[in-house]
Length: 215
Length: 202
Image (cartoon, rainbow over all chains, first blue to last red; front, side):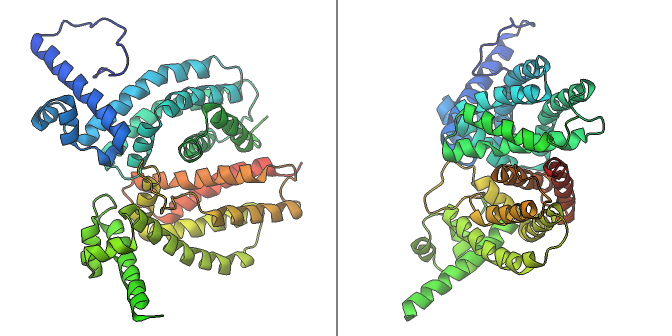
């Protein structure tokens, strides 16, 4: 991992002994990330400038730019850190499930639980995802690839265990499942839905999506 | 109408047109109210007497466009033929075709609907009842004709279809807005057919 998550205790001891210089640099990064997380949460992506973030972190704009190339890199690093935190839990939820529905609901439940707690940051990340640069898009896709691999695995197990037809279009099913999962966040944003309400809706939607795919 | 109201309506029209073009060409975040006023040939003050915020301008640009889209759809839908799935494919294809004429504008509209600072004068993306009703009508007709199972939760199906529809725009977002509408329609067709597989009467 090339970064340290700012809101989580880093469980493992640091494997390599860092020089004082490297340690100071790492602390600076952490301070910037913590300030950035707070400001993106309060003001959204467009509303928080690098200057605001530097000020909140108690350093100069130049010092921020020494650690991060631009605002989008800073934002992505926060999202990637969060993603790494939930990915392990999503994997576990999916792999210990007995049915395809349980697996998908389990892994999305982890994500809903995490993101609904930090809805403003999630809103900012979805907003940005519609208009970001192609380079940023490629990097984001890399994170998503892992989640799609989890979904694909769950679908394959569903086929192997005879829950789904052998000839299902797994890629397409995964895509639609993802679409409804993300689209449901609008219910949390606009209608204040809880994680349980989101999951109940998702469960019904998955029934609609998989109705023709069941063996 | 008095001269004053005439003038106000003309200003409004000019502002919406300028904003529509700038949002699409330059981007929503990049466009300032000042730039909109300049392009429209009106004063910054007169933009603000008509609209409370840039978000409100975007909202009005979009609802203005929707009026045109639904006029087109009202004309076309009575002539749609084929299965329920076919009709739905056509309706979504018309949407993709329409939004791709100014796709960056549309993407900005979706993005803005997630921005924390939404004021009450704004109708965000996804809150338009027309599409909902149109899809429900087609599905209900399918039930009447025996093309669609009668025990189906139709609003839930509509919800699922709309999610797939909206998220297919990710394809064009990923391509920097440079993608044929037909490619998104083709993806939507496949998604509809997979869902339709489950609503067949048995």
